[in-house]
Image 1 (cartoon, rainbow, N blue to C red):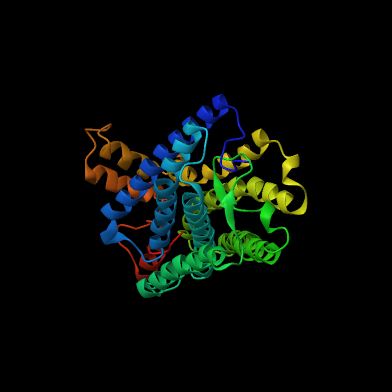
Image 2 (cartoon, rainbow, N blue to C red):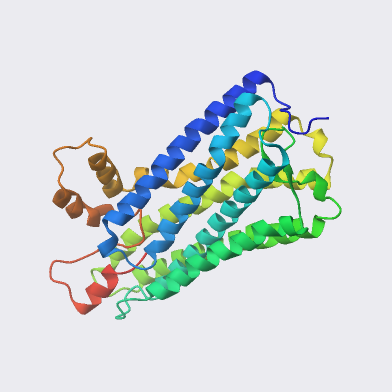
Length: 343
């Protein structure tokens, strides 16, 4: 039996390939735009914003390294390259997936810590050195988990529908069960709980900050950070929501017979999970007025808009990165500290 032959109909394979091509192109373009915008404001970038750039890099890396091969396999009605390419595809998919969820987790923790010091006189709450160490840790952590199946704990293999590869869930019922339990615990359950708790804590902090405030400027700060919080929550919920159906199907493959799931059904969670690389730029574009204007200016859609006009509007809704951007005309020391608060 050819385990790499598609279990889907040729027509459905063509549709899957077209879907992945659209998602891949939009993911690459969107995340490149996020990185370009970050580079253009690099002189004003605060340390925590590097985590947002790091998140865009994980999505961009996944799109570039995975989608071309997935599209070619779908249109060929057969996985291309055999065991070697299958292992490669499963490894990079797992690697970038773990890097993304851990990046979101670290970002939530950092935001939670800073939310306790929104009016702190200390200008820089998180140093560049600390953020760089965190980014390196994220990549090393993801690399270790991705290499474990190569070392014998876990296994990579084809999906049940034949034209994609990931962790070989059905083959890990016995010898890889401990790996699955640890992987779900440390790379899905605990990060998800941490993200939920951190953003719930930020919400509570903002509520009491607004309620107990004696400063007229504080309600405006709280209002901005509520908007920042909404974007952060949407990004986290989008990622976890994309991968949750795939996680459920994967657990079903381990606990029950994977053959009981029709290929046409098992392909849907996989395709939904792959779309996670696209959501962040879309969320930035929908909720950030400054990001939209900068994108339109970069693409030539707003030829009459100059950089000064765009810059003047960045304080209005600068939510696609981490800095709040509140800068009064005549800042006090306290106001300066508030303007440097990250999302």
